Length: 110
Image 1 (cartoon, rainbow, N blue to C red):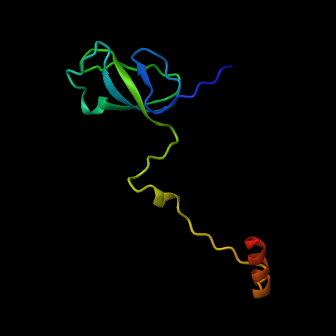
Image 2 (image 1 turned 180 degrees about the vertical axis):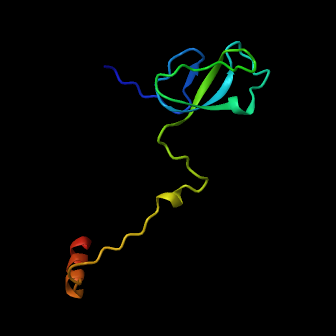
Image 3 (image 1 turned 90 degrees about the horizontal axis):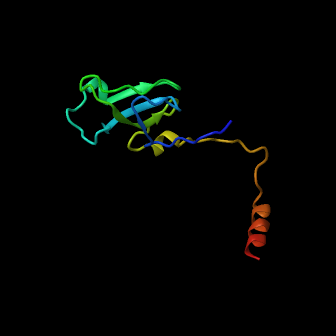
């Protein structure tokens, strides 16, 4: 069985089978237009694996859907680096002696 990597931003059209569960955003109609705009509830949709991409019912038109988030991915905030910072304290089993620290320092200088 072949495995495909589906990247964020990938486009899928109405009527095709969904290869990955996730959140999808309206990316334009199949005829190249964006009018009439979809309703608020049609702008972004969740869709599970192997479900068929729907049309925009309010416009009665097929459209392109863009993958914006895969299922299980946490949306990152503007300063998301803070989400990944963690302070860890590991107690040492023995205290470092001053003489050993000097010997290591001399080895590193050579």
